[in-house]
Length: 170
Ligand SMILES: CC(C)(COP(=O)(O)OP(=O)(O)OC[C@H]1O[C@@H](n2cnc3c(N)ncnc32)[C@H](O)[C@@H]1OP(=O)(O)O)[C@@H](O)C(=O)NCCC(=O)NCCS
Image (cartoon, rainbow, N blue to C red; front, side, top):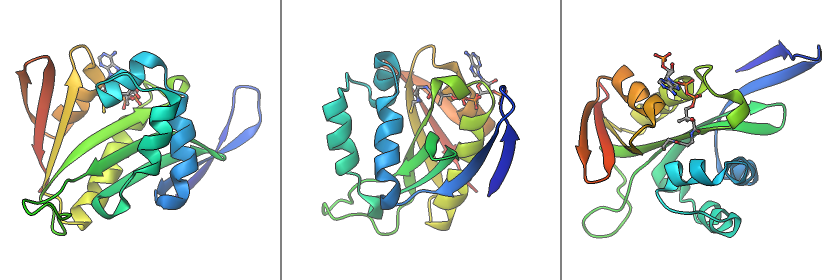
């Protein structure tokens, strides 16, 4: 889906919602590298260097994740992912039931509903892959994630230092 928007200085830019694939890896890497130290901690629950982001994006396993992204022209300004892990015999779960959600939006584009919108999009993708449950974890004070999970009627609880939410996707 594409839409043309008029920017503050009057020029036109193009917003494109994409189903992300391995071809988007360089844009994902650049998007994550634009996050400040605190945002990287919120996303990965640990300090994350540029080198760490290189390794993380190089290791993305597209057989057990789906992702939606919003491009402004050629720049990826937001991503929502649903990822699922290995099954009991340590092979990738081909028929996943539950997936972990992660979302990031470039600082200059926040508080406009982009994360909420991308999460709704990635849920649609996940449901097509068989996902019926969305899990998420976040640090205290990350109110927008709590609000997004509540939009999907999540059960929310505090465990140790982190908040957790589980939403059934019917
Ligand atoms: C978390 C993050 C993705 C939110 O992106 P965003 O595009 O600003 O989020 P939205 O605009 O969709 O806001 C979602 C909801 O939270 C609300 N919200 C946003 N900021 C808020 C705040 N500081 N306090 C209370 N509510 C807030 C919005 O009003 C919206 O609720 P609504 O739909 O009822 O209006 C963004 O801040 C980010 O990338 N943070 C760093 C990475 C991170 O923390 N990721 C989450 C862990 S995986």
